[in-house]
Length: 208
Image (tube, rainbow, N blue to C red):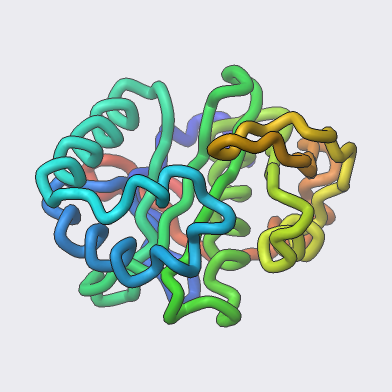
């Protein structure tokens, strides 16, 4: 890791995916992906219960995401196919726990589950978090009943630290919340560190 790398990473290429900062022009593709995946996402993602949402609301939301990204407040990414003609899902490097850590959250289009895309995109952003953002640890939080989501941090070398009972609000319920962590001292030996990616800054310069 080199200290002169300047982030954030606006664009990341992995083996099969383009993972990049949202642009308001992506709203049509994002709306299509969510509209097609509502039933698949409904048990796990509370905001899906407000869908379908008007296109203008998607435009406004992506403008907000982009503004937070540019201001260094939070980092929302779209997961695209290599042609960037379809949204395969979304992932975030969230800074809600403070400047020294990132929390990764993700969802995948219903037509692209069980293909390893969530694991591939999460591994890419673990590298970004440690090697570009220089954080001390990365967290993944998930519902213990969401078997697909639970499998991802385990594959990437995270440690299950705790399951908090009835701690996460989901509509009118309180659900359990698993917390998985990967610390900087354990990162070099983790499967995530071996992910082959290219990362680029806001003007397209390669930074990883």
